[in-house]
Image 1: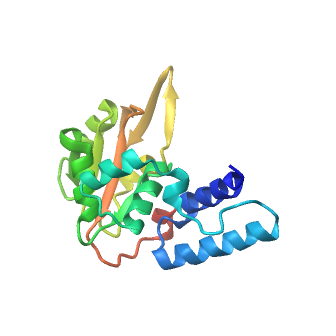
Image 2: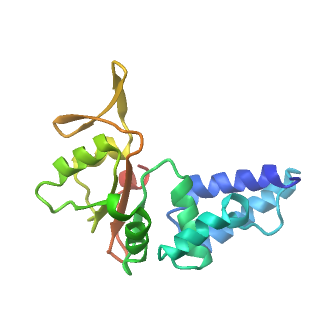
Length: 196
């Protein structure tokens, strides 16, 4: 428990800031943060492993059974995804994340594409029922209809939590989960999308 303070601080930094970066940059940042911990006498592990700090072996084993690749980067990405407050947009040209989400969420998963004419109506149903949704093939420019959802711009109407989706106001079920994947190998998303 001696290193807990620094390890949790580093884990929080990874989840909040490093999810969108490649492993090389993540490792450089972590090394820099460990150095800062040492300079400021904050106890932390000399070699950091996100899995050992916030991972649970039983859950990770299930992820691997559900077709998550069994390598450190994939497991770290899944840990970041599972602990983040934001809805994940996964760059997935090999469809590994897509396959993992499909397998892990099973039959309850609603799969949508922004090119579908009725995707907004289906999304409204999923939000109100608390169903998980996977939006596939996300382009570089997102439909503005998604903005309140990405920002989690919920509000209360009486005792009911609501969210606006285009012209509709939908009851928001807290069990709702959103996952997005893009097959583009090197997409250029605007900074506004990246911070949501």
